[in-house]
Length: 126
Image (cartoon, rainbow, N blue to C red; front, side):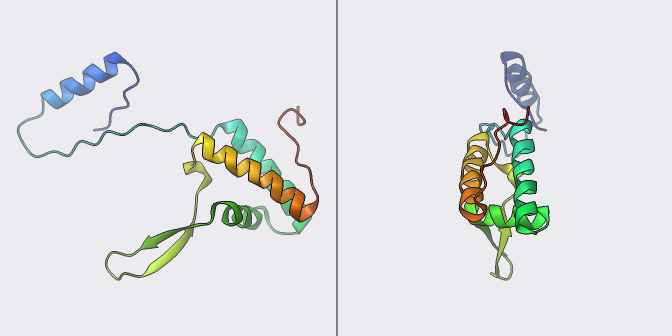
């Protein structure tokens, strides 16, 4: 069961649910939900990726990978069974609003450094 607690009614529902559980062994995890990137942020960043891919000749997917690796680096995963280390690209959908803002700021810098491009703002595209 998963509860998203954002008001006192939902908090009370969660407490009631836990209170009504039969005796047994349970794991309860509580963590703060972080705000994910916004749709307008995402749309603008993908527009920038398309513009940069047009300039570089790379496909948009390839350009997106290049930008993410340049700015975010790559995540590491260790296989618990074999101990083998592997790497993966970060997924932008998992970034918080603040992390995505950082990605956008650095994308603007890369566009200027690599292609001499000034990327439009959301206001420029209206």
